[in-house]
Length: 407
Image (cartoon, rainbow, N blue to C red; front, side, top):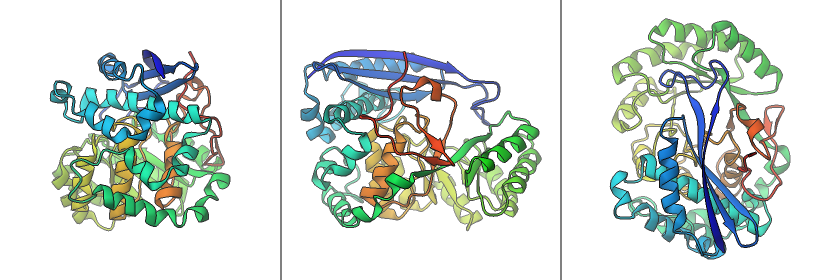
């Protein structure tokens, strides 16, 4: 049973220009870390991602949630985790601070992810294996599907899983071939044009078949110029994505997104305010067939539901260290599968946790193995850093979710 709780506020300053985008000019990658220590000596590690200030607030909220798990057995907790998630996320006083978003929801992600890590370690398997070995009934019991009943009832979720489990074995090949990655670090916002060009050359040489550039400059000509630099170096066959990190108003986005179309972006990410579902719908219709991608700042399954209902995005980017953790991530993945929208996670975890989740998405839910974002900046801080070779994530084999940090 869980006998001890540790909460840690970890912050990692980055190199010059790294991590910068049109909104966040000087980020400090930070984790609000939950450690659940059981009576056998195993430690479940989970975290939520922030950019520095306020990380301590997330830690304080995580302490509140984690304390409620003391004395509980992890197998018992996970056998009906959906009910626990529902109870914690709707705690009557804490809920007022959300609901289901912001500091309290980030804290729940940290605790939830620690539960999944401890569960996998208790069974002595990588998280991806634990998840793909669960039956459809067991998966559904880990999910909170409340407020989704109009589009995804428990019965529909169960049937969706059963329908896709039929072809599971045909998709096991991804475990040996590895999951494709894309390089999101070629074009951080504060990098010079020359640095962007150099990074593109390096990424192509390393085997990446997709890469992403940060846009959203006050001078749109800078964005256009840099996007064509990336396309020139990458060539016509490599996928190039553009990410504005919510910088534009809808009128601005309508103008500049049309200008980008000449360099054939694979997607345009977070073009405007993440809560403005209808603005994204308007923009998507105006720039079709160019597609939008979003989800990095979508805080919960209900807003994802709204985006899917409107058809506003061609790609969804849920992040298990920003949503309510692994449980809500799987819920969103099922929603996306129902609507036929690919899931390409944002990786506030630097890909550590999500390398497990995309394998589950592909093998058990039937999602296309498109690619997974790769950000290398914190690799040296992990006990088992994600391994990317030839532009491909190698399947992790250690027990747990690969989230243990070096102290």
